[in-house]
Length: 392
Image (cartoon, rainbow, N blue to C red; front, side):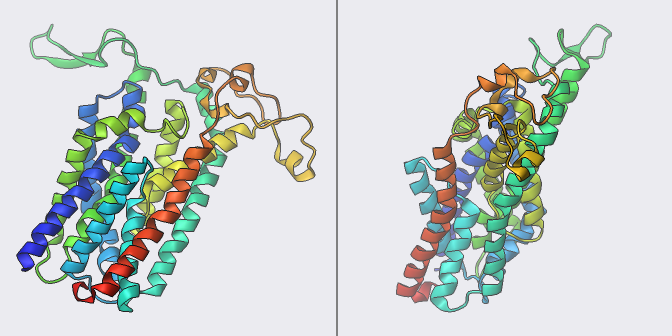
């Protein structure tokens, strides 16, 4: 019986990991692939390796929280398998309606529903997790706001990330033993900027592994007959990797399209901020959604960039004059190499003519899912474990 339950759990874990890989690969590698800096297959390979590294190291802290911290008793194998099905069902529904599901939050909600049904919920732990869910969007927004208002314009003035025609590196065979050399149009600036983009993509993959591997692995490691931690992590990583190599190719193409058509440099600021927030919270065992930090950082950078025509003093004294919030500030790519407009002065015409900062409807879909996702999984799990108490 235990073997049967475990086999079912493995299938459910593979399904969850597969879908996580499909969505997370696009978030981590969509901007570099879109800029033609890296190929999709290479991105998926790097994604798989660094997801494993994040899950194997920092992700263990999140696994402990999911398997032991949210409820006061150990999560049994049968209950863990049921939780995996709630996660998989949430992902399926989200895919059907085309909205992003916060997997970590859905997982916590399902386990919390089990705790409510069995009167084993650790209220101190769950209140701490929810507090971070409230604080994280605020942190991402304000870091993005400061970056967009004060840092991004100055960096954008000096840095322009472009890929030249032809390969970045080639093998030079003129002197006997082949050795790597610059491509025909490659510059040092391009090599350095490409290296930075690659490092940031790997860093985001690491943070994705730290936050998402536990969602597919933790429910399988608890109780009698469960898998060892290491085996569950490897299993989840393989599933995430397969998702990255398959459906992840589609999400790479479409990532960011609903939020904002932002340039690569702005996307790198977003990736650094979101990855750092996610990695720090995962290191202290907080299950957190990488998408949450990413979305709010994008909104923050756009808002900060758009508010440059208005000074802080003007806002405090309410004397804003004719200054306006420019809706397309962050999407104007052709300002690189030009002096940043001083704060309080009107933006140049190319900024005024740019598109919207972000799609408000898309933002509302994300925020709605941060509320609906864990709430629905909590209610479904509560109802299931109340009606079928023997599973817990």
